[in-house]
Image (cartoon, rainbow over the protein chains, first blue to last red):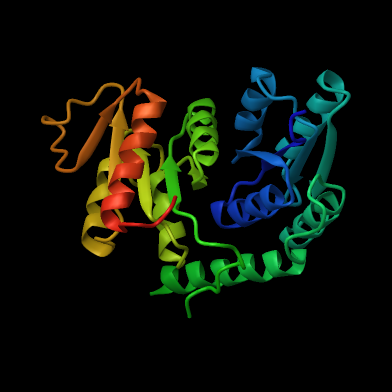
Length: 129
Length: 133
């Protein structure tokens, strides 16, 4: 049987990569998209059945909601999880991990959030330098 | 301060830069099946930001034509100057490597995934003899 598959939709590579790596260690097959357009391409490609779409949707951004609406209409068996902040996305990833195929979590999801925050801080410092 | 790594065993980390999401997903999946850890980026500029944030990257496999403020050639040049330990393999469907001034490794598109993975493995083996992927 194939591992359950999660599609992460997140614009920022420094956020998306740690989340994706965490979920892979929880036993999921993880697809990555940086925006709703690419997410649609992966979903419509159909070579993988996607069980869950996890999307970080910053407030005021409509594309994530449009994607969720499209998924509900065209892929009713695919669950959509929308998160408004990085912290919520990480927490939701922790919940998904708990239900994942691996027997136990590789590490606490709060470590993932700490890691992301350190990366973002490093980027800010580099941008200022 | 350099970000602390997550607790994971060392596997070679390949940064794939490709804006075509289906191509990127395919090569990334094959590399993961081969035992590599893969970072997927659609833009050369964000790939450079990722490395600049202190994340470990052992090799970059990049398309030449990428959106954003940097293309694959400029990414390779910048890495050559700032991170000379990170080998770069460039790929393209329409660039003539000689005319484009590519000095390093180049794989024309469409590339054979098995051969490309073999090339990546070989480069990493030369870089760190005796280390598994």
